[in-house]
Length: 287
Image (tube, rainbow, N blue to C red; front, side, top):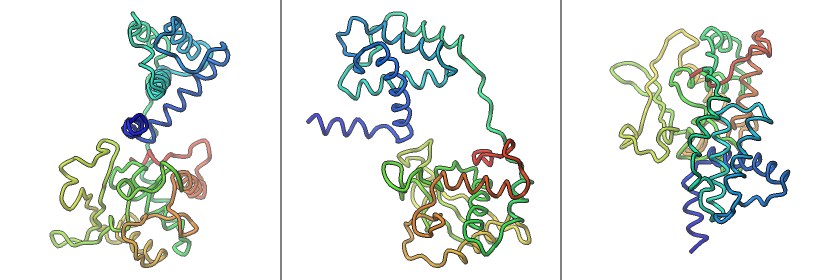
């Protein structure tokens, strides 16, 4: 039953966590290869503690990594060892926690919040859009949705076209997740959220029943009106039969819009309104 158990254990981690595992393994392999060690640290290895300390000191002394990254890479390396049917390599290492606490003091750096994207930048982008160009209308609609709903970018966009982080109906915006409605006599755009970072199994009470909806009110006569951009977007993309397909599309109008493409488009519309490369805002700054 080993293969089935491995499959179940692997499934507990999100794709983003597996990226951290691979990143930690890359650093560990460089250390192990340089010292002539096996990549596997077995439970009975008498040099297990020495190897773990060497791994950490390499990151402290030979790189510019700060503690948060060092901690992540150590976690990734330990997780990979367990996936190779070895016990956690720090198990039973006396004073390990004190050692890592001391490393924290040497390498800690205060986190800086991501730079906020000013609302006037969004306004200038919205005002500059060519309504006849699909990708421009779409990027305007996406950034307005991110601004008004506080959404993270993983909701509108998968990371890849294919593979582990491609489009997922239960994670990314579907066509049916955008619905105009009238609530309390007001026109609104309803936007449904499915799986989110804080709730990967969609267990939150708000998501039960009809779903977790953000309600965005109409703003008549304003470029910030979500219904205005919803209408412009649908005029460019046309009617779609697959309501569980991706809401946002690649410029080829067939595949889903992926994160890297959205980043490039966001940078392009900022450059057009005169923002220099050194001051470009990131998508998370909308949140």
